Image (tube, rainbow, N blue to C red; front, top):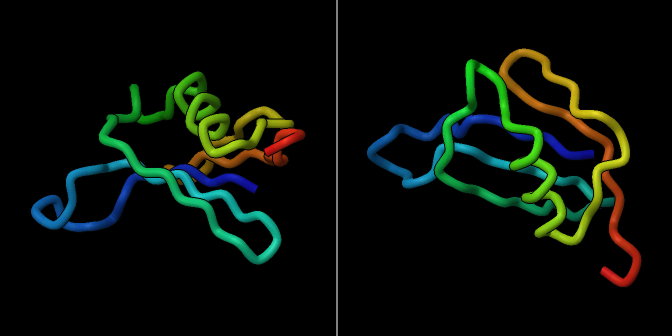
Length: 79
């Protein structure tokens, strides 16, 4: 499962504003970057690229709920 959300850290305490969390079994993989959601939503192409950079692939469409983006992901073969 992948979840993308805006960081809730105070602006003076961080230099990124977007977090991608991937739960794989008992492991948590995290990616962060400085990007603004567009029109109150997330750029699906960027989300897919970030998931891929962590060695996963998106297997369902992203769903958006309450300021977060959700998708089912799986580890890429050989990853």
